[in-house]
Image (cartoon, rainbow, N blue to C red; front, side, top):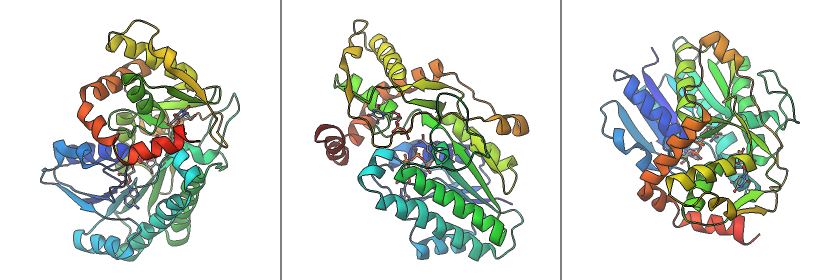
Length: 351
Ligand code: NAD
Ligand code: TYD
């Protein structure tokens, strides 16, 4: 059982790490990657495994009910690992509708297909929904999000993810669809699109461009290395309890300004620049609207019940990440042309 696995959003940042891990871990299972290839999806992320016998890529939209239904039928899908989403808060502030469509309507389209094709024969089936800690809202200076923290989303992105989580849970309670949900903190690592904080700063430091820190840089995020998230997803696929929610986090909180300074120091060394030169690029810019102050995850449930733990500390993870971006100049140059340039202008130059 759990032989034919549909991974959505597998050409994106986290999805590509999950697809790679599953393709390599399970030569006897079939992995189907359904991705629309929006600006954030990139088949370059999966070049190393694209010809593996147990892997198939399908370009398509999770909101396309006919397509999704046909995939269930053709490939006898018994597992969904759902990562496809519009994922960037700043873009959700500019244009919420794409988030409503993909994150909410797309999730329900997948739920309906699973319900339809599994027809109450739920043994050996799994609908695993990947979500974010942002659904819990914003913390003050103390405290942590647990699996029972009430939802309090505050951006169009987090509200759309919260809505999708509620719908997934509703299909469990109403139809007994076998679901698992995990809510994770901020990921970082190779293949992340340079609209998010860490790769954006790496790219700008490399090109000696201003480093736009929102507000005073005092907002706090909990950072997790992406491969550790992928490992947690694999563990929940294998051992997670149906109907349960699991929080996944880095236990690694950083104020944005401290993180950017740390990156500057690391990159000065890597690029043989005089110490302190990149820090001079730091520029405080207008704050994000409704900017959540702090996210911090209590991940003791997945640690205690299933034995998951982070495998790298932040120094190691950041160095792996910076090295990857410096060694993959072509990947970076390909994604920062075209759509990225017009987004960057709208987000950072014209406002
Ligand atoms: P990403 O933006 O890098 O990738 C999203 C992928 O989904 C892209 O490949 C894109 O082409 C695809 N996609 C978008 N709309 C689609 C549609 N309508 N149909 C099919 N494919 C579509 O995102 P990510 O950072 O890899 O995040 C993956 C998931 O993990 C998301 O659900 C996100 O909410 C969640 N998450 C992300 C983080 C993080 O720090 N990045 C943290 C916690 C949870
Ligand atoms: P981001 O990577 O967009 O993740 P999220 O908002 O989902 O947590 O941003 C991480 C933090 O960095 C957040 O507090 C906003 C801040 N930030 C900046 O200060 N400057 C930037 O250019 C970006 C993209 C983010």
